[in-house]
Image 1 (cartoon, rainbow, N blue to C red):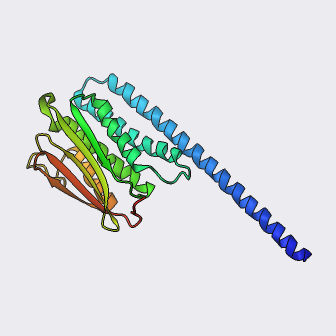
Image 2 (cartoon, rainbow, N blue to C red):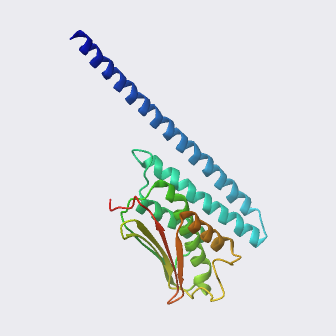
Length: 227
């Protein structure tokens, strides 16, 4: 009986030790994400300062684009910090914050930004490519789809289709993407990056030029399910 009691006591102590080890790992992970977030914020500040001193338009635009991309990655660590388990990101909130990055950068007050982000489960590893795709396509729409300060709408939607596929839609009702632009051969850094990111997701992209421009991206996600 005493041996059994001793074994039970040892088991309790082992469970306590495991719990303490898990708590310590959570603290370390939280510190890691906080430090990465802080370092990325320093980099974006440096890029912003550098851009202010650059007169060449193309260099200035490149620095601001790099700043916005780093901001998107910063939002990932911010989202993980807000997660209790430090592994899941609230994608509706994350995508909404990503859309704000190019909107704030341009200061365009005549455009309407709408979102329809379903509560689907996505692994946090999708956050970087999905967020960067949204940033690039929204930025591209702001810059090219509405010349002469015309009004319009930019929309982002994310939903689950079928049992294991996710669809990301970024669209605008602007002047439309020129017919001679192909994602596979385009020279634009932003659209070229979109093509690379879709490939990284193992997905496909379909471009529609009707009533503006729509990019429909689909990629497999075996973990996708309604929250």
